Length: 205
Image (cartoon, rainbow, N blue to C red; front, side, top):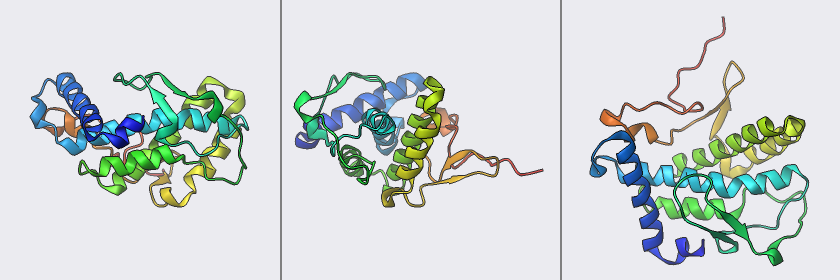
């Protein structure tokens, strides 16, 4: 994944591919989708894929040393389940006091700023991906739910995610920004994600 950092055409190609996919899904011209929308969706997918295994290992009590994009290898197909690996020699353990947001995520955020995505949206994407990883792991293995929530809470408390999320009155996780994907639909009237800031909260009775 170092190519994303070293070759601007690789990052631009990924964003263009996502933009084309979004246009086809919404049956709209590619040029009608703002580049920053495609870049935000690209960022969200890459962050979720690179963050999730690191999060799972932390829940298992096997945190990795800081993992950057130069430590990761991928098969760059579209979708959230592209093959991802790390060299065996890079595996190890580290102290539990280290931050839980891997360098790869911060590198991806800096990369996508060049496409016009605001830092607030990018940080919100990280928080959303983290909450999604916690939800998915808790669903797949209910016995890990308490540990997953504890690790997610520690990660969400890190300074990079300050003011990126809140708990709604009904106890639901909600980010304080929007990933912008609704703008990819015709007339920019696409559905909102379940944790979107644009969703109206349920007021207490």
